[in-house]
Length: 118
Image (cartoon, rainbow, N blue to C red; front, side):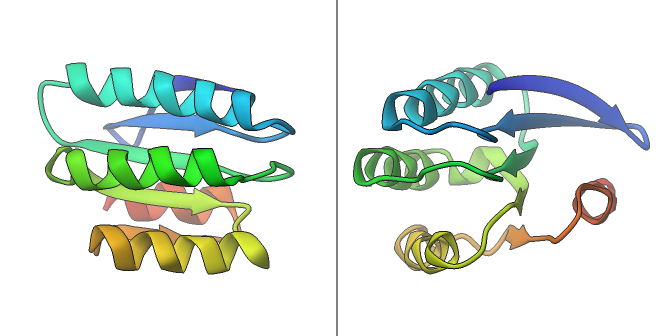
């Protein structure tokens, strides 16, 4: 449950790990960390977000929509893991709201990382 930096095939990627976050406060805390990283990045970033076994709620979605709109130009690509069921429905609403065309979901981390590194 944190934001870390990783290098993959010569690309710098921010990994937002929401995995196991069971409270809205924990989710928002990781998002706040991600926002700080994106704000201070010298150029557009690549983001891998893992939502496996996490609980997404309304305050997280609200803050996420604001983040997505405000920082769209600073996000080159965003790959998501662990998005199924209700989370997939919420993601579709998020993408419609933000207009993002650079976000995709993946079944495995390896596939997500390969796409980000393209």
